[in-house]
Length: 232
Image 1 (tube, helix red, strand yellow):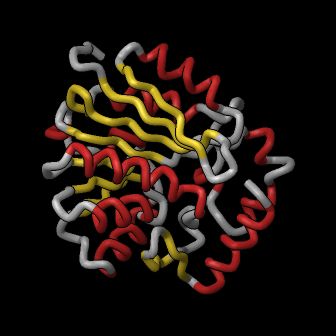
Image 2 (cartoon, rainbow, N blue to C red; image 1 turned 120 degrees about the vertical axis):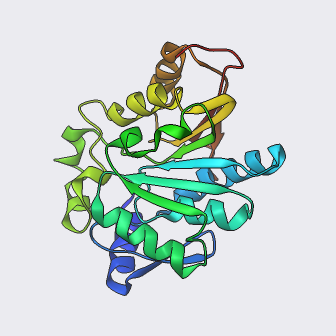
């Protein structure tokens, strides 16, 4: 995460707004400020769901300010989105952003620890799980990235000793919610693709793993699909 990105986030908090895929969103110190790099994840997920068609049921896991949920619902008029976060402040600002853009009837924001926040009727019925989880290791967050904690919550960045704690949980737990061939789409940090390939392979429930490149040619998002027949 660059100094420019950090400074842009601080400026967005000063204004109280940030723009994500053309949508102006409210931002607060209690939730992660949307970053431009996350637009790659949004575009990948939207393109996939447009190709599939229908009226998809989508989960935005760790919704932060609600930028992914709002962008996806705005781009997919037939989609229903569940946006989940452990932070009450994040859930509150997501609800306000959904209402601001006339999406409140199709975005349900819920509070809880990852998939525990979701209603049980979603089990096996979700078309896509999209997530921008924390991916900075605790050690780096306490040293070279410590300035991020001056204005945004620690839980938006801290991903355990190796920077993959949340990815490991999401990859495993998503299998019980995704329908067969449902999509998992996640953002990750620079240089984490090799470890994430191992995480996805060990889950033994996905195929069609792909990494998606940013404008600089670096992998920053992954997609995988739940096996047609799997027993998570």
